[in-house]
Amino acid sequence: MEEHQAKKWFLKCMVTLLTVLVFVACVVIIVDPYFHYHKPFSFLSYRLYEERYTNDGISRNFTFDAMITGTSMAQNFKPSEMDALFGTHSVKETFSGAGYQELSENLERALERNPDLKTVLWVVDYNGFLREYDWAQYDSYPIYLYDDNPLNDTAYLFNKSILYHGVLSNLKMTLSGAESTTMDEYSSWERDCGLEYIMQSYDRENINKNVDTDFGQKEYDMVVKTIDTNIVQLVNRYPDVTFYLVYPPYSICYFDALVIKGTLDRQLRAEQTATELLLECPNVKLYNFFDRYDVICNPDYYCDDGHYNAEVNSMMLSWISQDIGLVTKENYLDKLETEREFYSGYDYDSIYEDLDKE
Image 1 (tube, rainbow, N blue to C red):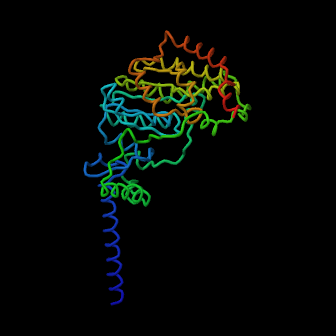
Image 2: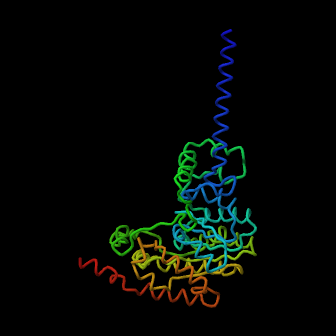
Image 3: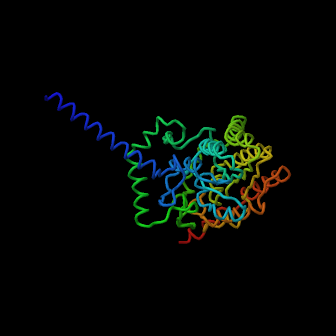
C-alpha cells in the first residue's frame, strides 16, 4: 500500500513538474524576448538592449531590406534617417567591441535568411586592419540562439535570466503601457563630449611606445587575410547586394596617439592595403571621412579619442547619400597622401593648450 502511494505521489510530482515546464516554455515562446521564434506581436512591448541576444532574432523574423551594422561606432545611427535618405526599410544590428569576424558571420546569417536584404551599411573599424582575422573581444555567446538546432533551445526556454530579464521585463513594460524600444533607440548611447571628457580616458603623456612600427610582409598578409576572409569573400557571395562600407572619423586625439607611438605610417599602409582589396569588389561603395577636419578636429563631437556622438552619425548618413567621401580607384592614393601630410604635420600640442592653462 505504501509503495502504491509512493508511486502515486511520484507520478503527481512528475506531472506537476512537466506542467510547470510546459507552461514556462509556452510563456517564453509567446513573449519570445529575443525573437527566436517569431516577429514581435503588436500587443506586447519589447525592450531591445542585449545585442548578442537580440540581433540574430532580428535577422530571423523582422521584415527589412537594409541593415546597419558595425561596432559602437555604428550604434548611434538611426534607421529612420537611413530610410528617409535611401528609401529603405532598415534595421540596426550592431555589436559593441566586435571584431570583423563576428560582424561578418552575423551579416551572413542575415543574408542567408532574408533574400530581400539588398543594402548594407557597415562601419569598418579603422583600428581593426592589423588584428588577426578571427580577433574577438568576447568568447561567450548564446549559440543556442544562433543555430537552427531545436534540441539546444532548452537553454532559451528554461533560462532564469531570460525569464526574468527578458520575459518578465517585457510583460512589465506591456502592463505599464510603455512603448517598445524603437530601432533608432536600440543600442544608441549618449555621453558627455568635449576635450575634458576625452582626456579622462586618453593620457598622451603615458602612451605605450613599445609597439611594432613596421609594415612588412607579415603585416601585409595579416591585413589581406582579415579583409579578404571577413569582408571580400562575403561581399562576392552576394553580388546583388550593395555594401556601403565606411571608415569612421576618429578624433584628432586618435591620430595624435599614432604619431606619438610612431605607427601612423604603419596604419596608413594598412589602410591602403585594405582599400585596394575593397575597391576590387564592384558591389562595394567605400567611404572615408578622414578629411572631415571640421568634425575630427572638433573635440565637442567626441567622448573619447574615437567615439563620436549621434550628430556625427547623422552627418555621415547625409554624406553617404550624396556620395561625399566616396573612395575610388582614381582618388584613393590622393586621399592617402592628403591624410599622410595632414596628420603627420598637424600641431597636436595646440589641442591641449587650453587645458595646460587651467
